[in-house]
Image 1 (cartoon, helix red, strand yellow):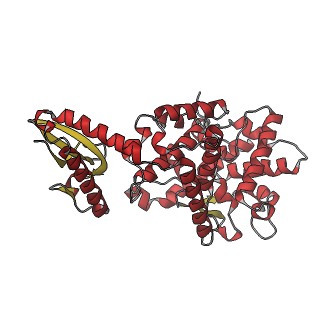
Image 2 (spheres, one colour):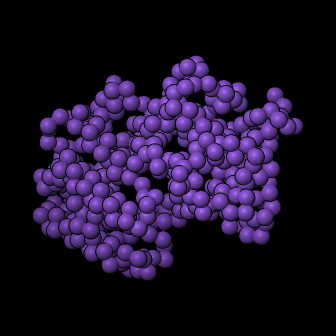
Image 3 (tube, helix red, strand yellow):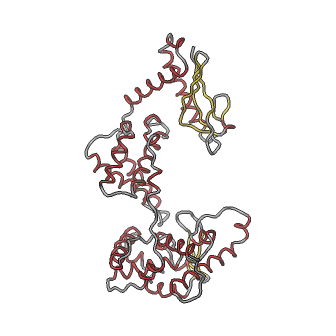
Length: 416
């Protein structure tokens, strides 16, 4: 007679094992994988131990095992002639059929609820953190609008989304003029599947997961950052215009570049109190890394141009939100690029531009560039005891970059 039990199989790259159902029948074995991975010492005698979610995982595994045993009872006689592989195929076929009959989570209804919940979380977070970002809400709202254009008023069940469906959606996005944004749409859709499958009551079966057969990794490589060369940066800096929005966008971009390409979100929220000891201090919102930039003489002119009445900069006084300010700057920068006959770029390209010119033109070390961009550094002995030295290296790098941009000082350009 056939029997089933839980075992560990297939160690992955991070030394975790898949908890699988092993089928034994007529001296043959077969494996049915589950959706759970644990370390070897977290599994003993068919149960998960010393794991933060052990109770929930054991409950689900017990349910899976019991379900398979009930299905085997229905073919009690046939088991005596079946191999483990044949029983596996039988269990999979029955399971998939049952899943397709009972799974009925509707895409648009679930997405609407998901977006509403994101909005509630954003508003709650905004009460305690004025820098709270609404970007996640925006991503899923854009996904909803895109899917509505793709499917109109059709009712779409998650269980019916397969590889072919995703390929059709990909084609629709391309025909709509979307290219680098495909990764964002697909990543958000993939996350919806994971949220349903991993929910406490497992609203969707892992068997309905289409991204097992459809990879989105290929799209991430399509979004190669656009950076400017030094002559293009200079052309923006010297751009003459009477348009107030273009003047504002030009000066904001150049100051951002002179501040080593800090994220515009961080720049938007800088206050007068953040200026201390001749440095601009801020905490990078994306990584939580505390950072500072030495104020050089060239900064002062742009500080003056962008000065606010009450705040250090006028961003929050001129615009009701960071998104509105960023949108205006992007629109104005596009016009500047068109007038200068250079490829369009957004203010976020300042980081890529500063680091690329620093490395390629000025021979600045990658480690120093990482520090300048406020990336997280490894917790090494050097990292713990040489912070002052690192700041000096970073300051020297930015001074060298400013001299290069304004052509006011010596620098050692990398050899061709």
